Length: 235
Image 1 (cartoon, rainbow, N blue to C red):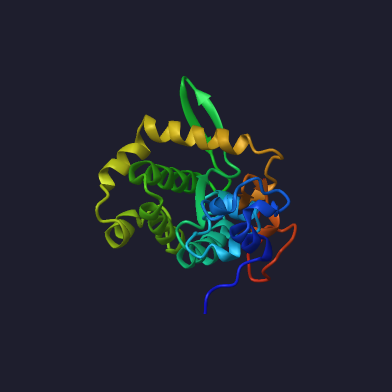
Image 2 (image 1 turned 120 degrees about the vertical axis):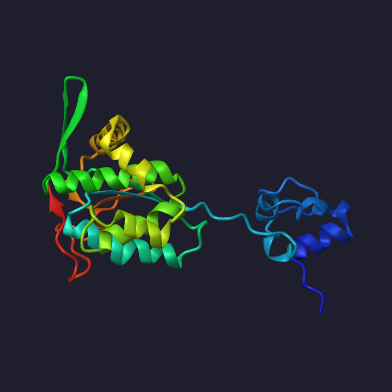
């Protein structure tokens, strides 16, 4: 059966001289299916069968966290990684900023950091930051970070996690980044990104959806959505 056409489109095609118009449509009928925007303006989108809908913009999620915070680890492992696996790659873009409630100071031109859960957390933050720097590609480093955060030790399992999820990465280069000036500069950038939050974060994990604050989604103590989620790590 041939597809039915809206009356305005049918009349415009059969008798263009009648001047049939659709409000908001300034295009002749033969152009109504030339683009999705024109089809919408001329109320013909349901009849332009060969015209594909424009892809929706991906949701942009930014996670501000620290490597040893129980609530951060729970959210990243139990919720965020699962969502990333289930959703199409074009539906969600994720930015990870490991720093959280840390503090930094410049000592003789070098950045030093003090973390909420001690030096081990600072090392974990640095490892994950340098991993992201070396891997570049999110789909390469996120499974490794998942492995680190879900394992027994965030700081001691890098080589094992690399072997399973990203054997192409050089653990030596990541270690050099952690121990050198590059890692400190990358962590300083994470500090700047965290300090620039407006409003400032009150705890971690702290989540931005398309640039807006969404603390209710993070398992924080203000609005606990999931009863099994640990309370957020407050400043």
